[in-house]
Length: 271
Image 1 (cartoon, one colour):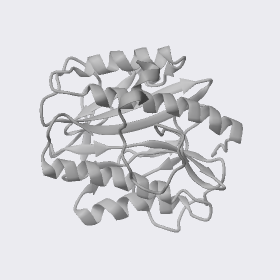
Image 2 (image 1 turned 30 degrees about the vertical axis):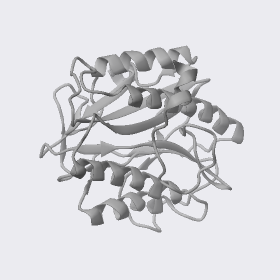
Image 3 (image 1 turned 90 degrees about the vertical axis):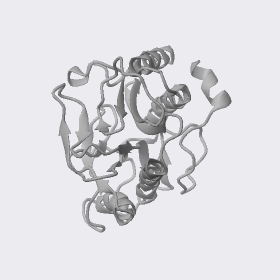
């Protein structure tokens, strides 16, 4: 069952989403060669709790950390540890925060220093595919339109869609109906309705789509060892179009794939 949210509930989710956005902005600023993924996780938990929220991921089905840190060929769900980031790596950081009973969920992929042009293009295409999907989150469209938008953007560029994992509805629980895969047929699926809130999260591989889960039971890697990128926003469907609840400010969605990272004073509230 898809749970529709009231305007008041959406505003609570916006508050949770703003916390997540601020944490991701700060962590993205901290990413540099030599930093450990455990340090990023420690700082994320501190910032989330200082904001009066709860790290949604920590303890979820036994997950041991507050964020997921997925490096290079790790697609999603990488567990923070003693790994030090190196020049040329990319790291996907996925963060969830529960505030006043509602969840915000978002992810970014960040370059560690200078990365290859090939990997830069992968990251940019993945980010842009997210905004292509968000643009379809309008009354009159169907769920298949949202799902297809990612596929239609990245596959002509030669990239692969991860098919084993997908986006999801979100609200009081991190995972609600409906599932939101990153592929599908336009015009198919349920009609979008006001009050739906979706976590849309393209996971795009430079090589083949095949993945596997490591023995830790969480970390998903590409089978061919090639890099993967991951971006995510929590998005509310309203009568006035899509609203990104995990944005870095309260500016209305303008239909573009603009920057995903802001710096400077944006960090001060959670420093």
